[in-house]
Figure 1: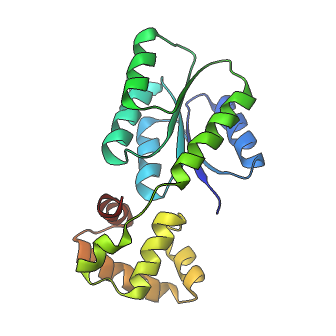
Figure 2 (figure 1 turned 30 degrees about the vertical axis):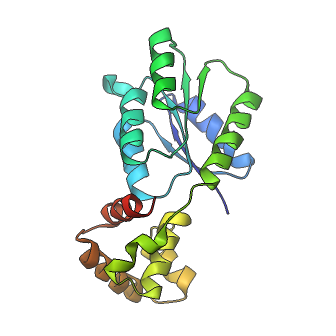
Amino acid sequence: MQYHILMAEDEEVLRKNLSYILSSHGYAVTGAKTLDGAIEVLKSRKIDLVITDLMMPGGRGGPDLIDYIFRAMPSLPVIIITAYPSIDSTVEAIRKGVLDYFTKPFEIEDLMASVKKGLEKSAHEVFYWDRIKPWKITPREMNILKLMIESGCTKNQEIAGALCIKESTAKQYLDSLYNKFGVNNKAALISAVMKMIS
């Protein structure tokens, strides 16, 4: 299983360098340079760990992202990196349950050790799939939900390929799932199911 990390950092050079280092260690990495971009990633696919800067453009950034994560997906490990540390921000982050807090510049080895620790924690998360039985989910629909949530496959083409079915068939199953959960897109479906199974 390949772990997927969200790198939320507006400084392009640092975001690309850290993404490269993480990728070279076998992790899949998605970058985001704004709060809205980071939240969009979290809504669209399963992320196993988040690394975020505290400061992002527009005065909204790490703290807002952390608030969103701990409200919507409280078991997701978060690591903070910042060039502007303060006692207040450190205490607040720890109080909210942030996994680790690094001040720039930091040692890559220390960050990688923290990432490993966070992913081990994330791997022990248990999904209670039997909680969605009342929705009369078919075995194929269950396979699609597990692909999206556990493996991060969110494109119709990926789902169809993994299940050896046509894209049009995958779309029909997804439409059925939207109907059962009262949603109209994959992000809303993933969010609804995650609330039930975690």
